[in-house]
Structure formats: C-alpha cells, structure tokens
Image (cartoon, rainbow, N blue to C red; front, side, top):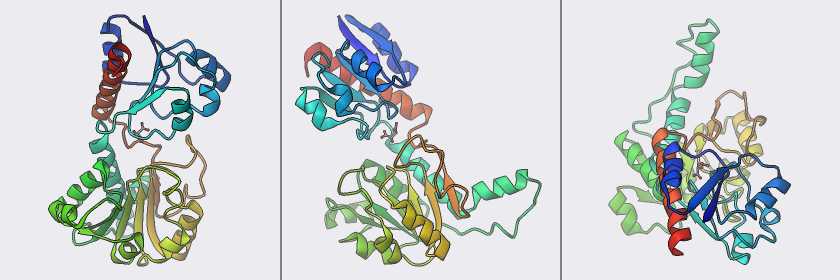
Amino acid sequence: MHRIIVLDDIAQEGLDLLDAADGVEYEIRKKLPVDELRTALTQFDGAILRSGAKLTAEVLAGNKRLKAIVRAGVGTDNIDKAAATRQGIVVMNTPAGNTVSTAEHAFALMLALSRNIAPANQSLIEGRWDRKKYMGTQLAGKTLGIVGMGRIGREVASRAMAFDMTVIAYDPFLSDDQAAKLGLQRAATIEDLLPQIDYLTVHTPLTDETRGLIGKDCLAKLKPGVRVINAARGGIYDVDALVEGLNSGQIGGVALDVYEQEPCTDSPLFGMPGVVCTPHLGASTEEAQTQVAVEGVHLLLNFLQTGE
Ligand code: MLT
C-alpha cells in the first residue's frame, strides 16, 4: 500500500483521483507544527503540497520512507531540494497548470494600478464620488518591461500586445530570434530595459540570483512614474527601495501579490497611496487549482506505482 500525505488544500478533483487509485491510501494533514510534520512524513511514501507547508532540511532529516514530494504549482522554494536530494527524495512540480491564471492576475494588477481600481472602490464605499481624483492612464501605447520570459512571462507578453502595448523583455535565455518570433524586443540587460518602459513586471523564480534583483540602483534607472508589478515571488524587488521610490515619485505605483515572508499581513507598503496588494492569489482560480491538483496527483501516483 502506498501512503500519501496531503499537506495543503488541493482541488477535489485531485482527491478524487487519490480515492480512485488502487493500492493507495491518503491522509490530509494541514498546518502541522514542525515536529509533528517531521514525524508524520516518516509514515508516508509520497507528499503533495502547495505553498503553505514548508519542507525544510530539518523536517526532512532522517526520513527513510518518503520517496517523492510533489508541489501542486510552480515554485518549489518551500521545499529544501538539496536536503531532499541528499535523502534520495524526488521533488516534482506542475509548471504548466497555473500559467494562464498567474499571467491574468499580473495583468489584473497592472490594470488595477492604471485605473486606480482599489482606492476608487474604497472611496465610493466610504460615500465619496471622486471622479476627478482617480484619473487613470491607458495601457495602449505604453511600454511594458518583462523580466523573465518563461511560460508566465510569455503569456503576459501576448496579453500586453493584445492591449496595444510595446513589450521589451529581458531573460538571459531569450535569443533575438525567439524575441522576434514572439513579436517583442529583447533587452540585453535589465539596465538596458529599465529606462525604456512605463510598466515593469517580473516573472522569475526566487533564487540566489533573483533575490533583491530589482533594488535601489535598478529603480533609479526607471523613468519617473513607472508602475511595477510582482506576481512571481516576494524578495525579487527590494521593498525598502519600493517605499523610497513611491515617496520620491520615482515609482508611480506598486502592485504586489507575493511577499518575502508569507502569510504577510504587515508591510510598509500596505496602505501607501499608489499601492495595491493581494494575498498570493495568482494561481487561485478554479481552473488552475484543478489542473495543478490533477497533474500533481498523476505525477505522484505514477512515480510511486511505476518508479518513473
Ligand atoms: C506557484 O508557485 O505555483 C504559485 O505561486 C501559486 C502557489 O503558490 O500555489
């Protein structure tokens, strides 16, 4: 019997697959404290999670039973992959399932910034009819800078082009040829990109290379008033530099869906004018959650049942 532990909420369609699988039993155990999590994991062959559970080296240490961990989603930064590998545990993710939802959320944030959706809504429900105060700006005719042209970056780019924006992208793996095929301009460096754009969005994982990638020096290269968006991972922008940029007017707006520490209910950016924030909702659509749960459960079952 293969035993699977489900550590975060996953869509019912994924649980239905587990129910229907032969020779498999599973338990849902969410929000376990570190000690309990460590002990629980020694009783299972496979684990599936989203971004809530943190599988650190400490939690995986000494585990002789666990064979595979599946992240129902893209980012595996909540799993210590080096520690897992040392223990012979395979880590897998489902990179495609939430691409469109995350790209749409980045776009929603860009539109929300441009049209002052959040403060205008707040003002209206507080009884004011502030039509003059919330003058916005069109996306059409503006230039979007994208850092990171993986699946999500590309979906954002195609949506931006449909909105008549010019897109300039930076990605160390993007060739001139690929850029031309995608109908966008390639920047050779982030520094080249920054002075040319009206909006900036990042779509990279959080790694040692991308932590603090967009800091004070980079932000100083932006045209005054640029709006910046992050629906990728907290930590890519330096938050203090964003606050400083907003205060000086160098930055015209900030939209964040992700934070260096999550859950995050306290940030110097919360409540600042020109800031709109959501609690890591990029992949929170019915479609994305169904896809990542189904894909993740298939990966796990396949690995446990066939070893592949
Ligand atoms: C991901 O990495 O898949 C997304 O950020 C969404 C999530 O954390 O579930």
